Image (tube, rainbow, N blue to C red; front, side, top):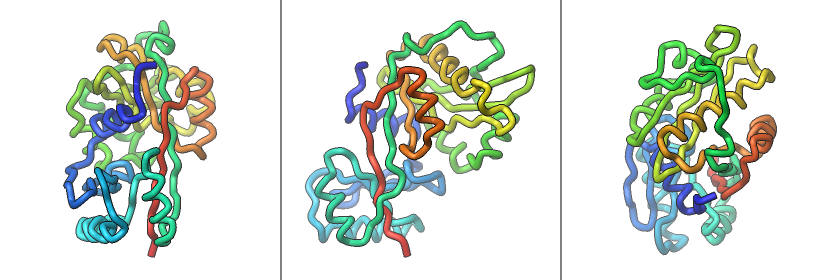
Length: 239
């Protein structure tokens, strides 16, 4: 495995980009425009003091976003201060990675079809899983080599995912399988299809983000030999 912890955050930022990132004092403040935590959180950039947190909070309010910080491995001091201020932990996340060459497979040519832009049926599958226009806009913003994978089973479209490459690593996002097609090995096929596409674009590794509490996804990725290369969580202040 060639990806470093720091590099994974860069890959995530590039393959699932916020609408904008603004430097405010010692903080990077992301404008997610309703596309979820990853693109709407604040991260520390350099030295900060507890009194600087108010700057980030006001920026979040100005954007109409939650007071939300992403806590990376080097942010133990920030984690402690935010906890003392009433911020709660939410959504601990694992970075899982495997070499592309260990995930490629000989699939039927219609099992996981790469295409860009996504087909209407893929948009419909994402929408059924709660992935709407705001997250589709994130996919549009990604600048590197990218594709939308269409998964098929018994001649029917049943799954979709987004994959993009940055610095030699392909990252898969927004994997969605229709409820009636789950537990049929479709998720595994989609990961193999993502690896096949990544290999054709000279990526070395394939990475995913998965919430620690998502046991089904954790089991899928562990079964494929993907291992943890890092982790983070969020701190949110409610009310």
